[in-house]
Image (tube, rainbow, N blue to C red):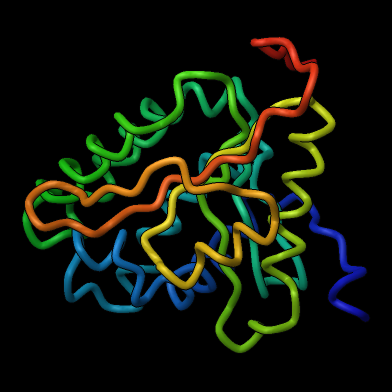
Length: 208
């Protein structure tokens, strides 16, 4: 099937173990993972993403494509507004996976949470494509799928990335860099990106 015609489908909790392996492989060199968890093995990374993805699958905001080839977590505005609380609730399970009891991980995500938009936004928290499936347009389809929903709701979308090569990719989909900052204590450089609010959109949106 033409990857460009493939449609993302909602992932369930049963899909999380397989998708966690996909995310572990895709994020193996990502600074947002490697800086707070240096030396983490593929097995540890898969366990990490199992913890992170589970609440998203249970909430119906995790979308997969091509079986386990790729997935994205798109949080609608109401859930994006609670992201910090959702993220912090995972730390008890994540801290034992780190080498310092979660100290650096917590500090990094506390800083990142402080940089989320104050206005209602759709939040692309995570998107990954398995290395063997990259180059087929699956990541673009996963991002476009969420943008279609954001545009239908007349709201902007937001993301952050620590990968310089991703900036142009997201720009090609309509995102603009709104801030570029280095995390404290020698942490990674983060690009914060957002799509423009559609014209004639009220200052606040309501979900149905």
